[in-house]
Image (cartoon, rainbow, N blue to C red; front, side, top):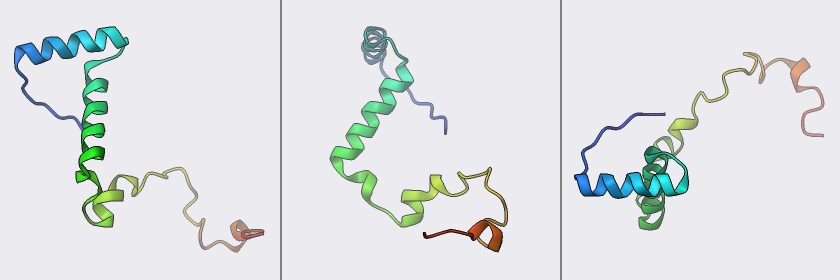
Length: 80
């Protein structure tokens, strides 16, 4: 997960801290949820190339065997 740092007015930080306490969570979780909701509603997150939209998935399977797609023994029964 990437780390972002940004400044907010003191009043907004107090409101954020209070909301996080009420929910029993962290401020960062609340900010992430609000940002995701905003981007989903605005449609901004859906624009871009396939690489931009799925780039975080590239390389996410790190424990798979190196010969998974080429070893006939591993392909036995595939598609049945």
